Amino acid sequence: MAENWSASDLGVMRFPSGALVRGRGLRHPLPPGPTPTFALYLVGKQPPRTEWEARWLHWPDFRLPKDRQQARAAFKEALTRPANERVEIACGGGRGRTGTALACMAVLDGVPADRAVTFVRRHYHPRAVETPWQRRFVRHFADA
Image (tube, rainbow, N blue to C red; front, top):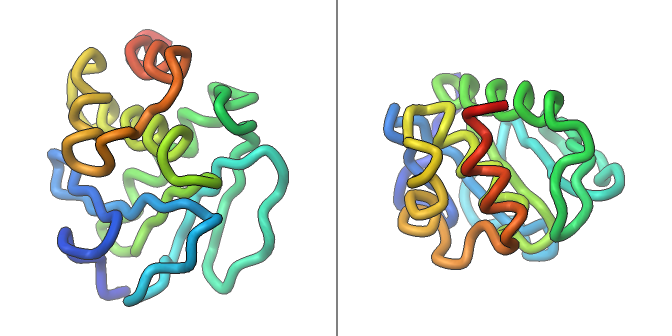
């Protein structure tokens, strides 16, 4: 079993269930401390290989995931892994796509969809979920 993140680690968000997930921007250096054991990368092209297990979700900058069903499955998987693994969700800057994914995961974890963006902005980054269509995607995520 991997040593998990701490809620005080840089970029780590605690979900209502207690799951800890780190969000970050791939354009920034890897934060100090333990590395992920699993990552979900939300980028427009396949990211470079990592030393840890990683999945890629095709998601162009400032837009929405290309395959929404695949996105839902990836978010569900990422939410189940923190019990035994250090999970990282990341996009280029670490706010728009990452915040949107974290908000959708919050919905899956029981946060009402109309409060999920506020939850992520309070517990992860104040400017998470950058575009109106990303906010709308989160609001309707439970309906899909």
